[in-house]
Length: 128
Image 1 (cartoon, rainbow, N blue to C red):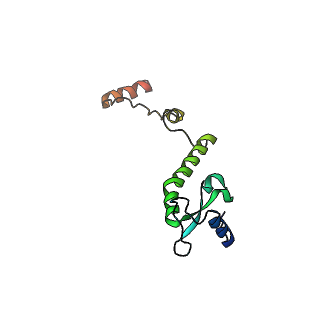
Image 2 (cartoon, rainbow, N blue to C red; image 1 turned 45 degrees about the vertical axis):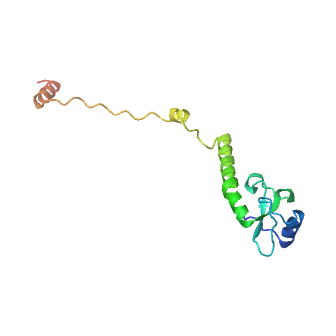
Image 3 (cartoon, helix red, strand yellow; image 1 turned 30 degrees about the vertical axis):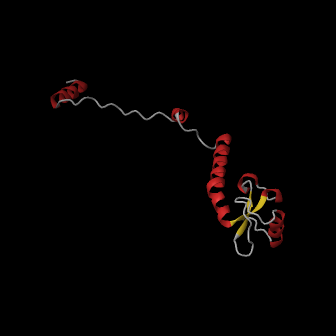
């Protein structure tokens, strides 16, 4: 599913509701000269919440930094927890090792025998 793109009306409403201030660096956004984006306070990937209560304006550079430093690690951690909780991820460590099938044991080879002994043994089996 593609990300929702906000209309001009949505962007104007969110910008005005927050007095045109970047919620990350608390600096005024010059909407004409500076690039800005609508930013989710709590990452969309965690909540699927696009309500105005979760949306704020942010400078593009501030938004990119927050996404890289905070949101991506938080989302990855949440996914790991969910996988562990549902049993999709196998545990690491001693329990995982214990669940593995034992390695195949190699058949032991008889000790190297001399030619004379092997001939004698072959004669014994024939009844000579």
